[in-house]
Image (cartoon, rainbow, N blue to C red; front, side, top):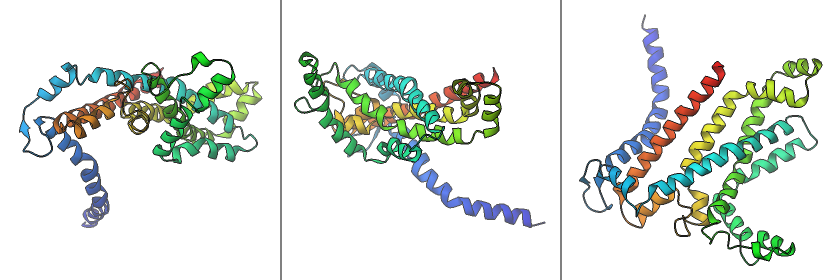
Length: 294
């Protein structure tokens, strides 16, 4: 009679270290951020409780201008969903048909994910260099001198120039997820469809893509939430400049924390990002469930 209890106790003890790590690394920082978001704190003095004043200031202050940062992050999420993911899906479909050099292409496309973000940032800074960068040299060679720009220094082009390497870096990541899902499709389904006269495009549309819906859902969630909390490449390329043209919530949060010593306001942005990512993940899950019901 005691064996079930002993068995459950063993399971609990086995999971306890992972639970402690999960609470300490994820849950505790969220709770602390929630607390500090309700205070005015410069990191040195005792935090002063001010209620929801930080949240009101966040959405009303023109000096902070959180809406500009959110607009940039939402634009990146839209581009990731409408450009990055379809391209990654196309690559996955092509590579799943076992072309010559399949493994080489997989490695090449996935390589940017493995390279340090700082290295990628420095690479693209060189590519965008107004004097010897590839873009401007190509435009000059084509006689389009008037099209050359200081790509990362001009506020009209800096945002788009910063988005290009972000989209490029993670194409291989999503491609590999989708490629693994496609490889899990039973070959009997594809063979039956081909026997019935379906083209490769029809097999992809009516069999493969519906079959890998769970993978597509995960990719969309990763793309949207990753865009909302994007930081590293933008920080390396422009640090939110010029004139805040490439500001996103994470770079704004870092500037408030370490340049203005407003730890309470920085925590407010962190809480807002957590809520936004959670809400968008729920919305995406609901959309995929509704489509499945149809």
